[in-house]
Image (cartoon, rainbow, N blue to C red; front, side, top):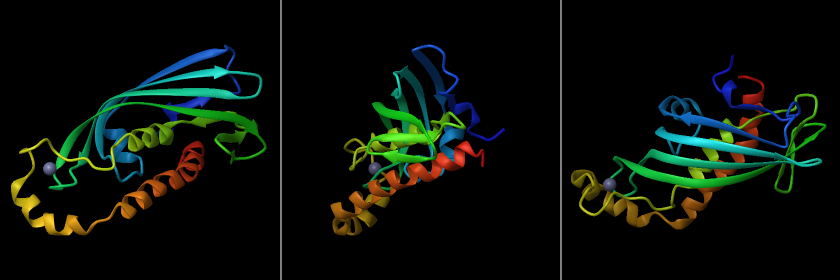
Length: 178
Ligand SMILES: [Zn+2]
């Protein structure tokens, strides 16, 4: 059993038009999935799958709290996450993407949504996230203030693109049970 096997959804074997899945995702998930933005957290995930003639429409609803690094003082901070995500999946010859639609091989018929859960959580984190006024680690924020003034929004954009680029790569890995 791979670490993320419980996040597999058997689309090809789906008999009902609508099916729902629920998970409670905790620290172990965030520690083991290979994403830099979130290392800890606790969120509930509900995925509704609606089957049409040739597309599986998946709606993710994610609620909870994750621990991220404060931009101002680099200490950990709690961030409430309430987000939704959409994913459209088709069965095809091989792994791929057609616009916004993810293609998975018909021979497998299974999608592992672990990385998508992580991605939707990561995308819900605001570009700038800092402690409430007065809650920062004062020693650190003093040392860092000069450095942070130099950081540009361009860096943030690169950061988010990297997250998206990871997605397909991880999808392969997770289905292979690595
Ligand atoms: Zn802070």
